[in-house]
Length: 65
Image (cartoon, rainbow, N blue to C red; front, side):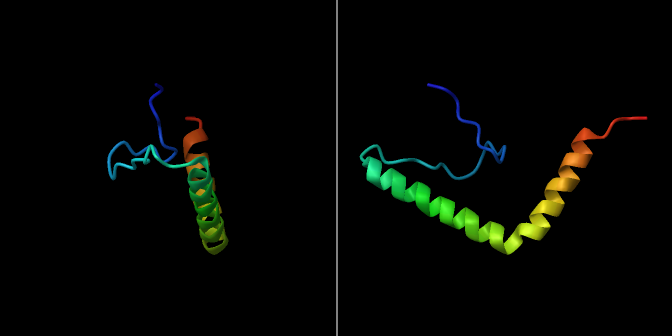
């Protein structure tokens, strides 16, 4: 089994356990819910998120002179 590395990079916090009894339909419903949540968050915070992503990218790619 491969180790899961969340996009956030966080290694501690809430354990997100998935019930092994879920049906594929339940799993799909959760994924759709998360997609909807992501879309709503993006719609509300798009401008500030883009600004933050730009700042992070510039910081990570700066070359020392």
